[in-house]
Image (cartoon, rainbow, N blue to C red; front, top):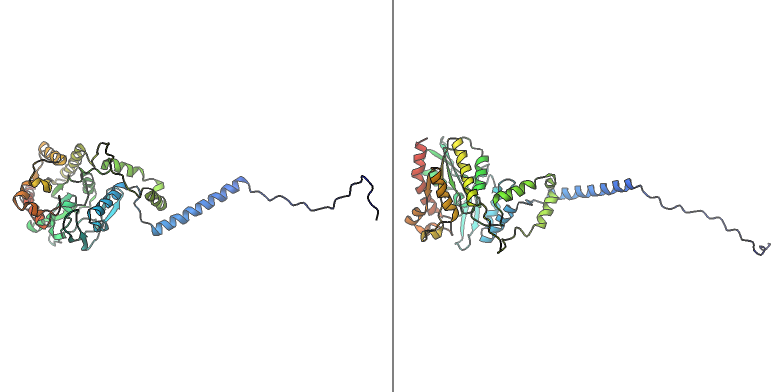
Length: 358
């Protein structure tokens, strides 16, 4: 074999070239990423709809749940459900649900609650045809701590044979929620009389926002994004701490100002007059008013609107002072069974008069 001459190059053995890996076009990469994201969203949404029940963004509902737990009656939350308009409402079709607990420093109690198909607290059924009387209010009208047949609407139905009582009281409700409840309840026939009892919750300061402001925020959240159970659940996690208490340096904004409260009461009165129903306002007493004569702002506002608009009003303060006083209360404001009987006695003459005039 000849050696290569000096300066000659030895030819390299031929090798096969390795082609570089193929790269996807950008549009294919984008499409692939979009498909992966879409599949992930579908999986997460499907899982959320199977396993998650949420009311994200409904700050009023979240706050009320925390409040009920803190006062010692968490069982009450079991009979309430979130509502996209009313913030919360009573669970429909309850049949003698047993609730036990207490209210702050009150003694322990147990009571049963029943509701109709529309979430109104049921009163003993009547078979003969009667004239409906609606009772709007908060937990005092609903009757926290007393059985279905012990609430003052039920007692009035027992005492006035001509009426069927419709108890539309819901724990925690303000006059704003009461007006919406009155608008939306499917009465079989327009009520002859509507008894309106609000003021305690309206004066409460929860998060320095009014019910009207929170309702506007909730309405703004009702977009296509909020149709996703996963996104609402995620939003709920981010707001798990709930609404913050008012800062000491801020002005304390009640759930309804006095002017807003009066406007809501007048809205209920207008509903009544449009349907030829007689509105009756009720001033519900605080326990401390057994020995004190001062009145919170909503009580004074109720007296003013009754006088200026010539509306019938029953002031319960002198009745509870004269007929049992302290023994009629469960806590600072809620009546026991004896208290509900006294309330019924105070309202009965005016209801009979209003019914006779119609």
